[in-house]
Image (cartoon, rainbow, N blue to C red):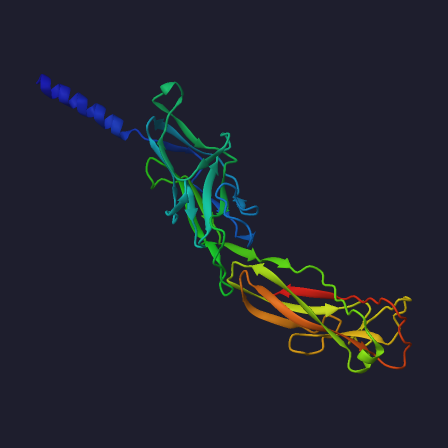
Length: 333
């Protein structure tokens, strides 16, 4: 009989311990949402797993308090990720875009810093109290940081280049992963890369000594070669060039030349011809295109500047040095 009594008491004690668990006492399960975002980055940005992309840091709305009472010390708690598993570095996860990584942080309003994802631990209280409360405090929020993990990305002109898809990304849990007081839901995150280009320096064309006979026989031609070199994360790029001058003729077909006396209403003019030999109109409306140029390769333009006699109805230019100027506009498309 004594053995039976001891057994029953022991069973009652075990049953009491097994039933002890945290009880939701304040607030309700909450989803914090990150709006749709677009990251922009320069193609010449170097890989850096320490410093996030300058405009690649986003935060959610803040939390209203969620609290549990009667939590036994040692209750499992944790932070888990959804759909992120392959790491680039410690707690830095690959995204849909190769070369872009993401870190997920949770900032508690009562903590001094950010908590990293993922993580698992157990509830503990001051003075080793066996029972206590556990709260997700008002004002807490999520932060996402994006990093460039390789020097060159592989993006597509024909797609949206989605870094992370819309949907749940992370959650806080207590007791088991089925109990999720706080969930992070994101909208679609995209990325756009801007080409990094190097332009040729200003061009000076020296026509040297020019005689009336040279002009009368058809003019004097000099090469006008220029270009730009771009690094792009889209594999190739296209460029177009146009030219304009504030001192062009009324029909924009040649640049007026200023002679040694300062007179620009004389017989001299400079025509510009593109790589295929067509006359360039000097108001920016005539374009020459260089298509599908590989990243890091120069888009080259080989033009001709031609000094011509614009007509006998004007005064002859003064002997000496003459000048003219124009502006070449290079655009990516």
